[in-house]
Length: 81
Image (cartoon, rainbow, N blue to C red; front, side, top):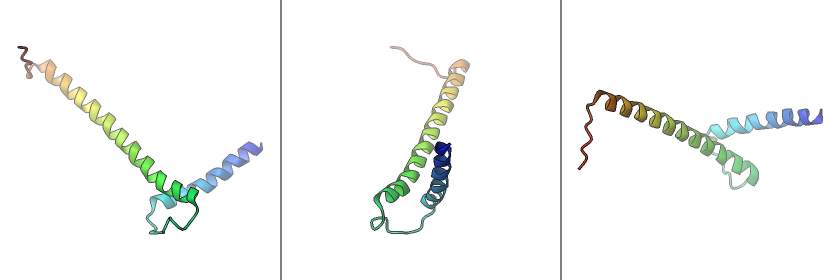
């Protein structure tokens, strides 16, 4: 039961921190707590990595589909020496 309360309390603390990390407050992070500064800097980096992953997967999928379509139509002849 107390574990459930801890999770709710952690979620209530995390949402404002997440919102603050996405907004640019212009605050000097070198004067505050290290954990807070680390979290504020890590959240945008993790989001950027997730977006790069999505881009890479979609790009690979589209290139695979395109190459399959090109090879099926026979418009791309592979010259073997």
